[in-house]
Length: 239
Image 1 (tube, rainbow, N blue to C red):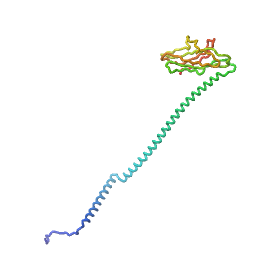
Image 2 (cartoon, helix red, strand yellow):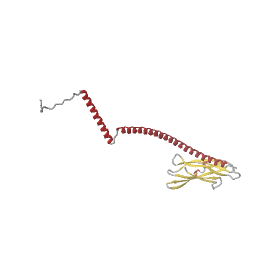
Image 3 (tube, rainbow, N blue to C red):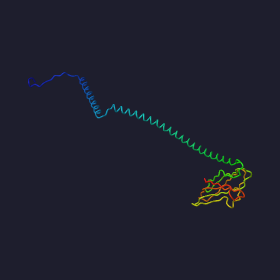
Image 4 (cartoon, helix red, strand yellow):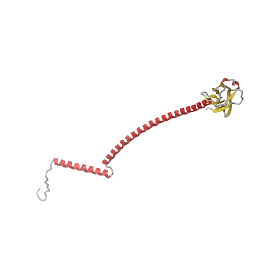
């Protein structure tokens, strides 16, 4: 149709398909870039940054590795300290045992010294008697006690000492104090209680008490033949 009432017509240059595809691709890349930029801006605006998060994660991993190394080193030091402490405890125990042994040996040496001093003549002093190493202790059997002592003659030993020993045992039974005399009247002729020596004589023996009785102390009395008064009286606690 021609004339004023004819429709408008536009003439455009034809665009090849590959240019249109390239333009669409560029537009898509622009949209993707803008979307990523918007997403990153949103994370930063919200206080989250991927690079900072990665850096913090790396730092935490390094700190964890360092802490593991420190814990491993501390465990090694702790194990070494425990071994050293165990060695020191064993050494301390050995020292305590040695000290007890030495203390006992020292006490024995003192007793030996006192014993030998009693055997040495003391000028013109009259002879006397002394009790050394007097012990009374409970044996393995219940109610059975063992005693021992050395009776020595001191001063000038011009003659043998002839006499006897008598023991007085103080014990407790059912809250009652009981005194037991050894030897009994029927055993006074027992040779175990007779004394006949020039330098020293060992006296030892055992006695039994009633079940439940506990010996508190024991006293020894040394009598010389012909005398009713004891020449020596000495007591010791039971162990």
